[in-house]
Amino acid sequence: MNHYTDRLHAAIADRKTPALVGLDPRLDQLPKSIIAAARDRTSSETEAAASAFDEFCSRIIDVVAPLVPAVKPQAAFFEQYGPAGCQALQTVIRKARNAGLIVICDAKRGDIGSTAEAYAKRLSGGL
Image 1 (cartoon, rainbow, N blue to C red):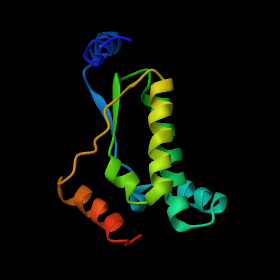
Image 2: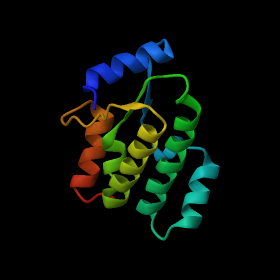
Image 3: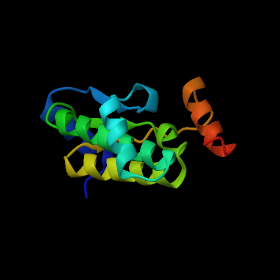
Image 4: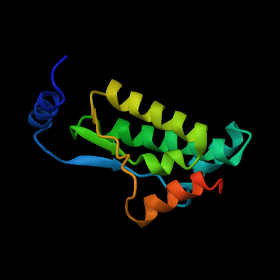
């Protein structure tokens, strides 16, 4: 396997851009049709959110895979939904890699307000 930076440079050269796409799903900003379908498929609100995140991000990956070298999922927005959210993050990462994208998982702690709030919600049992 090539070194990560070698793969990233090759992907940038192949796509002719260093741009990447952030995957920062927020339930209140997703299309209502995706949320409704996720609620129909699942038995809890946390599972529905995770399922909606998975579908939304998967659709984005399908569109951007030929255009950019990398995606950057924001772990906090997934992790706030507990195990179901973590599973959705894993599925999104796998899909991105299978589409030939480099994945830069944004999982820093002590971050800006929106992600710090998402981490805090999960850790405090708020969801």
